[in-house]
Image (tube, rainbow, N blue to C red; front, side, top):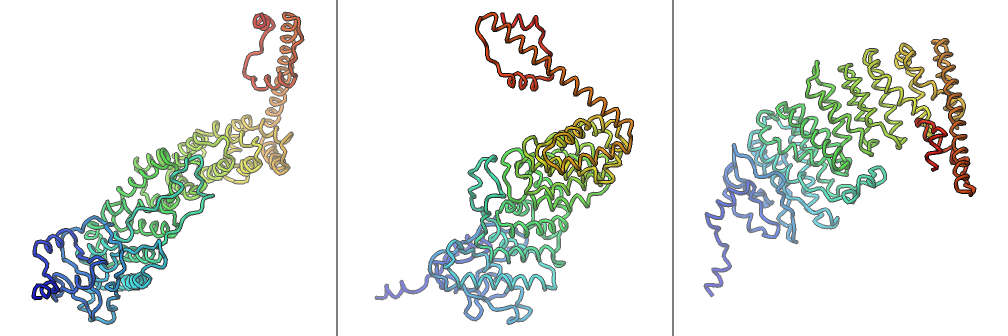
Length: 539
């Protein structure tokens, strides 16, 4: 009987095990299955050792490790099991004296390190609501605090943030798709089920970073490169609400922690490299480009070589992926920012656009033409002359596009006063290049609006230089006559070839006239075969 009574008494934990707990975990937080008794042993001392429970509420055990960093961020404790009676609300900050608010703040942070399972909406409803209210109190506290955050506090803050935010993103069905099949515009994004808690944690992080009581020199030990990289990993979340918060927070971190700026730019660069050349799948490209747009806007002049290389090696190749429409607006803004800061980059940008110009994707062509107009608005005459020949060869092909939106968008370039002036000043080079495309549109384009716009452009050129226009017209008519003569020669040559072949075999050979014309149309650059060569071929 005495043995049974002794077994019922609570056993005192060994000093060795308590030391191990304190050394490995900054937060000695009991498991949800361990019951209330594990948390009832407290020392009662304020600020040292473990914190006592207040009014019978659950209070997590906190070890003070001043000057030491916490363990790996994101090491969350997910609550399991039926016993959640220990997870109860702590007192409000209004209910404790000012001297106790800091200790209460630390205990609330540790309490919020527990992560609940949101895959089952009916599970742990009371505990989830308690945590949500506690998080809201933490947001209010960090917004109204009037003293600098010390190192211990920053350690606990980053630990709580990491426990809630840094997680493996759910695998998406997009991951199993090839880049050719993946279309983010058609696929519905999945929403983060734990957003009711995540949103408040993001708001807490934003207030903490933006707070004047956060000393950047001290905080950089905890908001370090590892922290930034894990934030950047979250940009691939399918939930746009999460990406919007991340965009704002990362921009604030970039502004507050100057020591991290080169690293952040390099890390974003690496994300883009992987997206362009490997996966062509990433949900946060638009948000990252929006951050970069603000960063580029603040670049000092003259631009560093590092920034110019970023433009040439990263931003210009970002036009290549098929999902360009998801981030083109932000990309175009970044590109034009560079050209506005250094007009000499216009030639590099325009030649980059021509390098990646789409051949069969009409919607991308329309986007390219829109961006081209914005770049040309900031282009000066000297830079324009360097690239105008290959540029207007491409514009000429766009003018003859059977897709009316492409042809229409190309013709709209003449509505821009600055671009029209550049073209008019260099008309002796440009008009001979695009005149054939203009004439083909006026004579045979199927869309009436394109024909009307083409006539307006022809009138601009004729009003600017009638003699040059007439020369181009005469040359175009001569070229058309030569093409007709070559086509007739080609047809007659094929007829002679048929006759020679029929004479050799004494059998009639049926060759479609349309086939011969089609063959002749596709071989305009080849030399017209001579009768002697035909005879040799037939023999």
